[in-house]
Image (tube, rainbow, N blue to C red):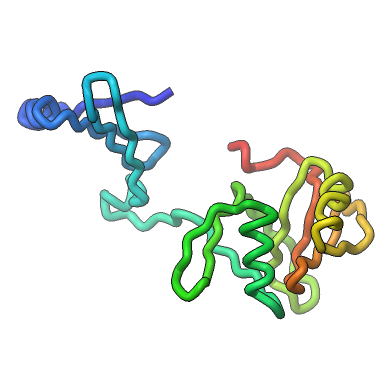
Length: 172
């Protein structure tokens, strides 16, 4: 449900009526509801977080990096097979919108200090589907928190694929 809240300033309310622009707050993001006609509205979401507008520092997202021996091939795979929406940052350098994320903090083991994992609700079915599309997988291991396999994309990039057994934070 979207609650539209008009500003309490009478001059601002008059301006809203004249321009048919209403400012509101929706899940901590700035949103403008623009009336293009009496019954037709466009919703514009601004990337600036509402706390930033008050001068507070805010983390607005997570940018992950995947290193690959053949980045062009893996970008094509993420775009064409996974269907991840993307922007071209220039010269074919694609930046993908990925599914919602969550972060866990684990004790350090070995040299690895970070890891990228894709989550699925059925790891075996996803292995079968992606194997036919050129991915390879290590055997699935039950780690207690979930069923985990290491996936290698067609271009050589590697990341984990896992089926969580725990409550997921992406629903929060």
